[in-house]
Length: 352
Ligand SMILES: *[C@@H]1O[C@H](CO)[C@@H](O)[C@H](O)[C@H]1NC(C)=O
Ligand SMILES: *[C@@H]1O[C@H](CO)[C@@H](O)[C@H](O)[C@H]1NC(C)=O
Image (cartoon, rainbow, N blue to C red; front, side, top):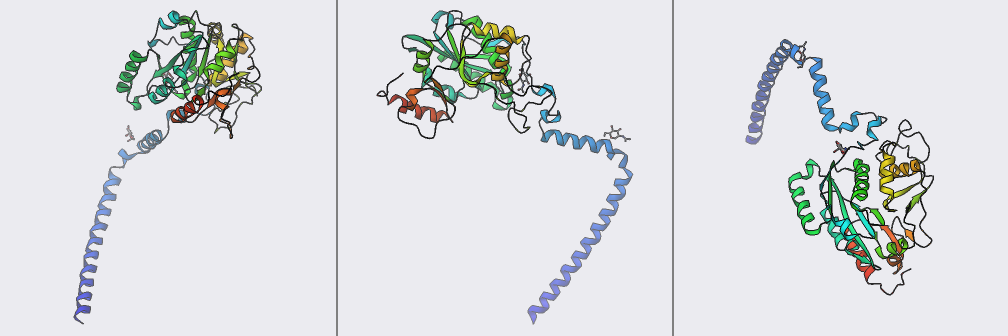
């Protein structure tokens, strides 16, 4: 009984408090609305639009403000006289390598550089020929912490003498600039060399098979790799390599060597640079090199039979797979280290 009285009593108190609160709330709303009406000229439509637009911009990249058909999205600023800020001005000329390996990599990706230095990139004399490697870097992005990365890159350069850095922003969309800067560097710094290969940092490379193939290859007007002929231009807007008809009206890409890894004789860089003055710099780097080759009227060469530039790792690989190919795409630096151990433990497989 006492309990129930107590309860009812508390209920009444609570309800009274709620009523008082509601009354205050109503008063507050009324006054608020009145104030808002009085000050409405400062909360006008233009202010509202500006705020919405700012919020929209913070949510979307600046590229999204452009229509997907805007040509500026598909071309890069080249030629543009980029300079090499970290260089090896004499090394190639002095060493006269038979083959120069050029590896594009982002400044922040030191792990990939070290994995390559400890695997296929450490082979400096292969079948009696000198081979050397260089990493190609642009400038690191602000969000990656420019200062510490620059310092680390300089330190790597002093230790390994294998860094080439240029003053354009390193980004996926700027790969064409990186490749063209590579051609500039090769044509001015490697006059005594025969071949170069542009190879991505996530690849397996069998340098021995590559040199063996190049010993029989023509030293002029030569480019090979994974040669794509009659490939359809991607018109799907969600594709990473989408190109609108207004930017690239042809249905097929020109014949080109896939960017994962292609090899060329060192008379080509100068010619490709000359062609680039007449061919607008498309952001898809391997297709752009293909367009320059077409402009020059130079045909690409298929690799000789049995010398394979592979894409993905096949589902079933025999023990001798890694000794039989030239390239294969891998997923990570750790995978490269693992594959390298497998490759080295199979000396019993015959090389071709
Ligand atoms: C509307 O707001 C904008 C931005 O705050 C201001 O510049 C403009 O003068 C305002 N217009 C009126 C009519 O109050
Ligand atoms: C490409 O590099 C240029 C030159 O540094 C820079 O202005 C531009 O913003 C970069 N573009 C992209 C998409 O990163």
